[in-house]
Image (cartoon, rainbow, N blue to C red; front, side):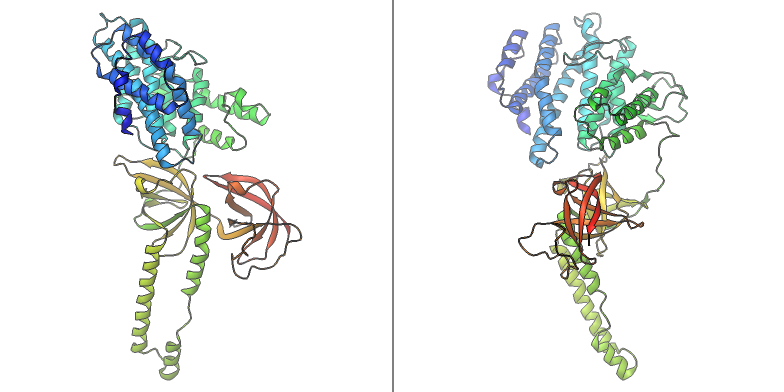
Length: 561
């Protein structure tokens, strides 16, 4: 991490003039993008230390370095977003490298802009101010977006700087001046469009979207920038959202706002109309890429993302509101993650529940036959046995591979927890988990739907509980001649057989689904489904109903019993 802040001796004065920086960029290691970008950041740090010199020549050097290294930054971003299962150390290195570049390049443009504001009459860069402002606004938007990827709340100072940049553009009458922000941009953009895009993306900062989905929404806004408008006067029939430029926060939903001088207003009417037209075009067979949905957009799961974006942008009357109130509720819960670990634990929990339902002890039966009641001596002996069982249970808890989470609140459909981010590196939106109260073995299935960080740095996790009944089962590659019957020893499959673990869900309407690892799915694949409580069945997998982090919810048809 800290290598990004160390200046290498061989890189002294490479940003001194345009000729030197052009030659230096050409000599960067082409085969090691990470190391090359590290050198770029080191020189940007050095460049920003010389804040007193904001000449036209230095601005040309900065802009050339920015343009020449954007492809490297884009490659690092793509590597980060397409490798969701990389190790925490690799993820951290990439994130720091990407964030450091955005931070230093934005800091540079911000410095030039502030110097111009302080001395507009004596500035040599006045003609470049709309471009500088646009790049600075986009830079702050990128910094905030990459903090979303780690479920962090953007610092208030970042938002205030972003708001201030836009106010400057308004004051100097160039907020709607279209410029080519970067050569690779398909169309010209205005500072107002750059600012509005950052505001609209802020609605997804603490949503249930994973980083790849947040990036996709940002790219949609890139392609639909002509539909983004920021206004200073409030129209209740048009404006769905507002932002207070005097506060360090993003977009808020409008509720009869007044036209306060500090407020700016955003309408999503045109965006929603366009999004719904796109949905109809997709259903008619139009390719997603031709509709501005990017090359990475996939159907049918892409409809879920479109629907979620539609809800976030919708007017208040059309937007689904929370109907299940969150009630503060302290407590500790045991948590297991990953489907295989959950399947291993569920049979153990079932056995523990059965063993806890033991009949009356022989000593108690003898007392009842002799005296008609249980004596105090027998009761004391029973209490001693109960204490031993409790101690054994506590010991097993200490030895188990559980995590203990502190509950924050609950609703009828989910639970909220305070989670230590340092000890839960595996935690991601869409992760399947099993939960049980600390002193109980009543397990419930849940899916991580929302992650956020509060002001104290603690992570907040929102868990949606799976409503169906569930049990651990095994799936064995099967055929119509496979042996059927009951599994006598629960999930014990003979060694050497090709079997996988899964979870069988059963709804109140007796509709059944399977939760399986995504690597084990193929439509129409047949498995022998074996359960501790039901006859073995030959099944054929159908369509995917839902998906998350490494798991799929799949329908199936029974072929033979």
